[in-house]
Amino acid sequence: MTIFLQILLSFFLTEASANSCSQHNPMAEDVPLCPSGGSKLLSENYPIMAATVSDDMGGPGYVKEYVTKVLKAQSQKPPQFFLAVTDETWDEVVREIKKQAPDQTTAQKWISGLSRVKTNSRWNWQQDYFESFFDAKTGKPVLREVQGYGRHGNAFVDLIKQSSKDCSFQEGKKLTNNPYKSGHSGGNIEAVNGLCLIGSDHFEGDEWDKYAKVTCENPAMAVQTPSDFLSVGHTDEFFKTLKDPTQKAPCDFSLAFASPKKALDLLKKNPQGRAFDFSHLTPDEALARMNQTPYTYICKEFSYSQTLKNNDPQKSREKRSRGVSQFLFEIILPPVSAGATVQPLKDAESRRMQEYLERISEGGIDDPALERSRREEKYARLNRRRALMRQSGMIKSSSSIQDAMDCYNMTNKDLAELIEEDYEFKELNASIEEATQKFKKELLAKVKNSYPQCNPKTVELPDLFIGEMDYDSNPPRYVMGSADSIFPNPTNGDIVQDTFILPEPVNPAFKTDIDSSIKNLGLKTDYIDTHFAHSMNGNLHCSSHTMRYCRPQGGTK
Image 1 (cartoon, rainbow, N blue to C red):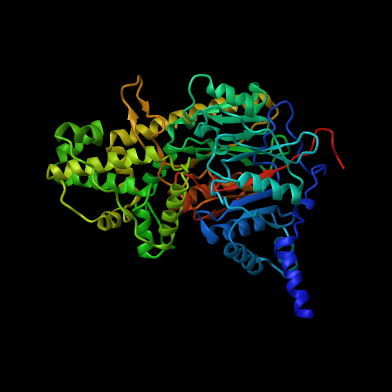
Image 2: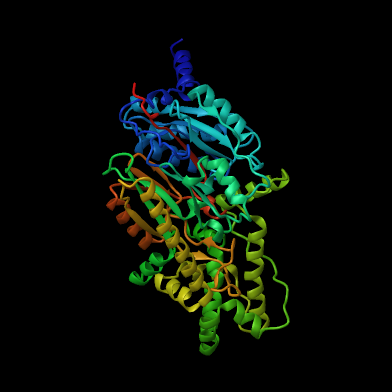
């Protein structure tokens, strides 16, 4: 009988019970007031009541790491977790909590806050198919599905069913849009207190204005971000509202922006450092990653650059002045077919990604974060260059493994020279820097107008992009929808109490700088390896969703 009771108790603790939401009282005096007069979105300086995550792409490893890091960062009043996972992942999460909790009582408390979302649609991009708002009367989360997203099956229906049962969350009006655009996705919608930020991601005509009215409610509080340079143009790929624990609400926030200029400066200041560090992986796993996007783009560019230098220094100088694309197409004719793309090594991570792609393909689903047509165009362009160079005799046949090894051994100096010697590469990042700095200036002015008592701190986080320039425009600027982040986006993370959980940066010099910058804001950092998402043009924030709450105006209890 004793064993039976233990088993029964374990069941209730690990799957049936759910009590973390009850620990969060929106009427408590220490909860920041809900924004007034603006949108009903909450930025990440507000506390988390619940979070959702899936094992669709990252597998059990990602889910258990995300859950335990969030629990450690918010241990006293942990959030409720809605897990869209398999039995295997559920069991691994429970075991990991028991292993990492400081004591048995805490472990039971954390485990009791796990809710299983029973669904056939374990969609990875939890940030994109819905957005979290707040109820002005209760301060609790209201979940609104992105109408037209259409790739997530029953994920939202099943999430609402479980979250309304365990936390009394309400479903709000759908975020209507016609026709659907990638910019409608939740990752393109961010907030700075009452300000509502929506990226320009390939909207045309008055489409952005229409969607801002639906999403932001008060158009005067809407701010457009320059997300249209990205192949997956979402605001969270280059901007983040952080918390400022040294300030009182409503000024308890700071702002982070991705900066190519800072990234290039760091490469130059740390010339002998590794450009790409996967020392936590086996050699085969590291090479597999270098053969996957986005790193394969850089590896091919590096191969072309080295070939040009070795073949003819004068041609290398021409490349610096005009860009490798224009140079190759001018000197080599006629065109030839691109050939096959590089196939990644079949390590466990690669197999899981391949299974994911096959699954969505068989289901007739197009992954919006993959942006398949744009990615295929980029592969074709890169392979076309290689074919043209091989035809001219400028390069000999070589294995993709050797190319990946050479690329993996790049130093920061190598990468900095690659950027500066390729005019298009350098100008692209300068164009993106100009756009983000302009956005920063406009956002700060809007913040000052809306919150004149606040002087938020700002921080620039290093990131670099690869894409194409439009030299027919005047002045030349990036080609819309062409850019991918080379490194995991440092803004694409989650603020959990006083900790910023973000993707492993890959570059050690970048990581040191991020640690220092975030520490200066009064926050701690923690990292998760999110290559599974980065290779699909998303990241940690895209692959999770935190549901936050606030204190209604005039309410205490």
